[in-house]
Image 1 (tube, rainbow, N blue to C red):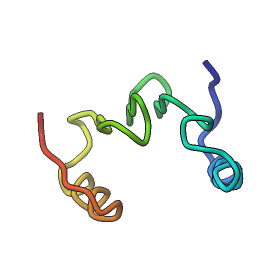
Image 2 (image 1 turned 120 degrees about the vertical axis):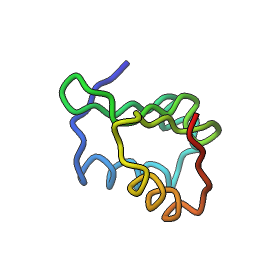
Image 3 (image 1 turned 30 degrees about the vertical axis):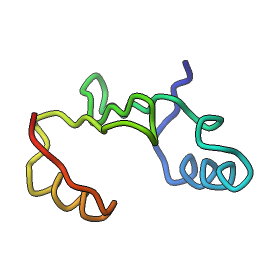
Amino acid sequence: MFRCKFSSDLFEELALLAEHHAEPELLDHLCLFDGRDSLLEWHDAFANIILLPCSVPEEIVSKFSKELGLEFEIV
């Protein structure tokens, strides 16, 4: 497991890698944290659901899912 600081540089580098590598070669699981608090968990990234904590307001989740062209449901 690798832990990386979330930054625009990180995602720019991932985007560059994605130009020449298949998605499974980039990462398998993506988890974002704010300190010890989970912000996002994406197991089997690119092929499975994204889990967000209930502390994220529904309005933000709705906007995020629309930006991705996806639907969401509260579970």
